Image 1 (cartoon, rainbow, N blue to C red):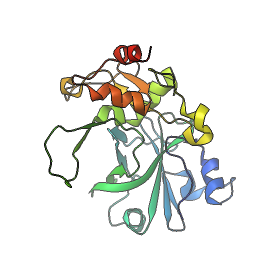
Image 2 (image 1 turned 90 degrees about the horizontal axis):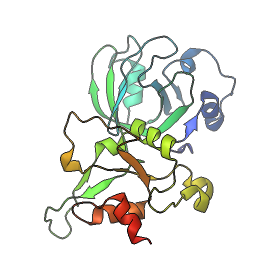
Image 3 (image 1 turned 45 degrees about the vertical axis):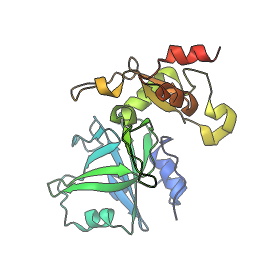
Image 4 (image 1 turned 60 degrees about the vertical axis):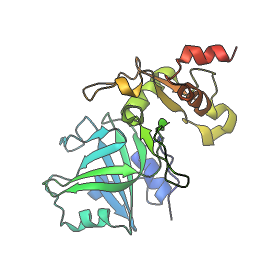
Length: 243
């Protein structure tokens, strides 16, 4: 069974309890800490850039669409809970937030890409279903039938940058105004691509993205047209094509 959480949507702990079928008034124990299990599922609630309810801050942080996460204070790799979280037989649902009193955002079902046997244990999570797509296909020649190489802008895939961009500009396309929620209803709520105004080749390792200055929400069609031309077209140039 896979629970019907929607990637990128907000959930309180009580929302999670209701959806998975336990009491909404659940208090105490592991459910009030960073992670707890229900059946063969694990649920991680983590704070990014802020301390949790216990006052601890383990520097959880996003690197592109990878989440660097730390377990509880004295957690170690050999602990049964950590081994269960890492088991291929279990699903790990990961929720995150920037402010301690705000709802959590569902990041997706996590896959452990890297595990460090530190105290607390450190896990780098990746997610099968990307919600921050800005894919630019490589121009490298490939034989027919080969796997297509895709270069992905990690800045645009960062959930924190994406969240702040949408909070400022909304989820309608900055080029054509298309809004997925207005057309598709609940299914399309919050869905939009995030476009970086600066070409990838001009972004260095020390670059810090400004979600308001550097990013814009665009629909997949307009996004594809921006990147169809080399060098990439500006938003103004694509807007002009629509008149």
